[in-house]
Length: 210
Image (cartoon, rainbow, N blue to C red):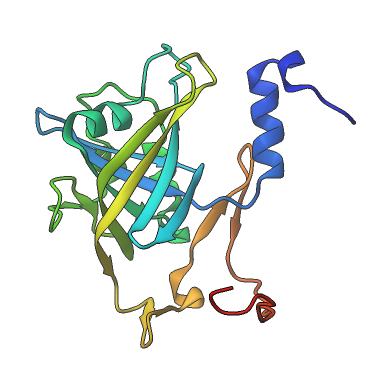
């Protein structure tokens, strides 16, 4: 099959992208509006960028129901802050509830039965039930398209990290068995991180400094 994306509706292209680019980690992004209203939403176009400075990015799409930016993006534009919480298998159903398109004045924490707690260095709350969260200051927003099916890249600098002792191990390792992280596939499909194999990285063949 050979495909030119411009010849397909964007919903069909989305199905191909999300079916092929797998598994995807889920950024459960919490923000607060200028009026002090909490917001929480999951985004599976998400990854780490680099460690110096520690940087994360996620992509937020234009809301299909009304063609407007999602509340997450609106809040980040207004405050310059957000928190990325991780989604684990015990939190999957709560995460799914927070994926519902809701009016801006509805608190997804309350809707999903989750506990918000104040951030340490940012005003955006974090999800107490999540074992890991990253407090971020906005680095930049890169608009790609404001049409339905389009979106923006949100890049944040991590200013504070908190990890539950049940997943953190000496040497700054994560215990994947205790972590129970899940990943996004496509449609209603998700995956677990519980089938692992090791493969040491091969050494560089470029001389140091060369």
